[in-house]
Length: 168
Image 1 (cartoon, rainbow, N blue to C red):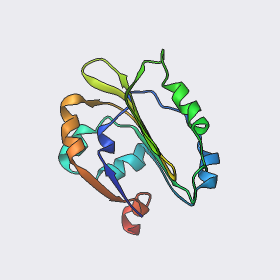
Image 2: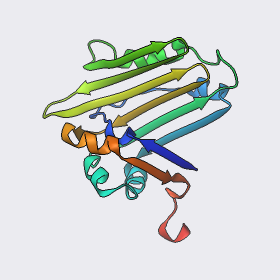
Image 3: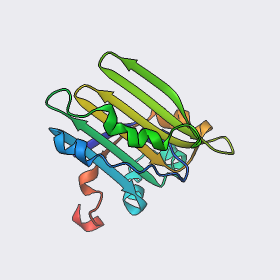
Image 4: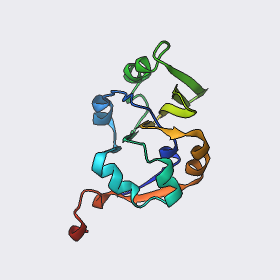
């Protein structure tokens, strides 16, 4: 399965993992892509990234991507996302930096500030009538490197990510 991660690695969270369970939403989806990379699996996936990107995301320790597509509208609701939003609400150190809402779609981006000019956290929630995407990255990235990562397009064949060298 090829997964294209455009700019996702340029957005990071610093030592604050957001706990979310979207199993009930996933059960209703016609299509789903669930990616959780950390430790050796993340390191192996990053081996295929361009050198500039590798250096920029060297401190990323976990990547979580959830994407669900549905047959019809109403398969999930805002209430399904409230437990996630509560973890990044006022008083937690997180700030909502983007909040767009149109008739049938919305995008929210939250960031956690940290010291030293680095992004301390990142969470993306993109909701459409028949599609939901949540991206959370744990680690840190300096703001000077962000532009290079955002410009890059990274393509991975994750079907070989867990295979040993001789099994590919």
